[in-house]
Amino acid sequence: MTIAGCVIGVVESGKGDFFGPLVVAGLLAEESDLNYFKEIGVRDSKKIADGRIVSLDEQLRSRFTHHVVVVMPEEYNRRYKQIRNLNILLAECHAQVITGAIAEGTKLGKKIDLAVSDKFGKTERLESALAKATCRLKVIQMVRGEAVLQVAAASILARAEFIRRMKQLSDEAGMKLPYGAAAHVDEAGRQLVAHKGVEALSQFAKCHFKNFQRASAVDLFHK
Image (cartoon, rainbow, N blue to C red):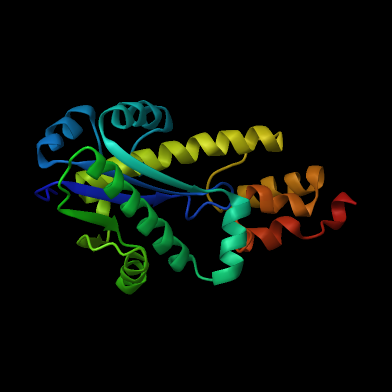
């Protein structure tokens, strides 16, 4: 999908993963840049292999104005405990990314027309966060926003950063931390608790997920 003008695409990664951070990325591109996106294979990052994502991320970061916010697990858990609402946290991060991308683009003399955000909840959430940041840029919130190439490009930046941070956390944990929130993730959580104690989960995982209870439960067969 093509949206005319100078557009900031904004999207998150890691929202549905028990382990790892929440990452929100924004990328600023002109309509004239869209052919380049098509040439290098920009599309929704969920449809791209991790190795290719890292390569595309390098190309995009070197060429386009962008802003990335990373909320590591300890900070994520602290903020979530205060607000008890993931969509409010997402709205705060999306607003931070949009205002950051505006600032970066303005430095380069860019006249930004609008932002397109992958929709994650009630539109009022992001509108309120933007108002608090005194941001007056027009923002469109779209379900499956990655259909817009600027958002798809931002999704590559967000996913690549999530991949890097997961590797960092895996190194710190001394074990490979899996993606997602399925049963194999519970098993990895139990292994982490066995080696580092239940309190370590807050350093590596999002503690409001149901996986937390399953990973931290006492396993009588391993006493």
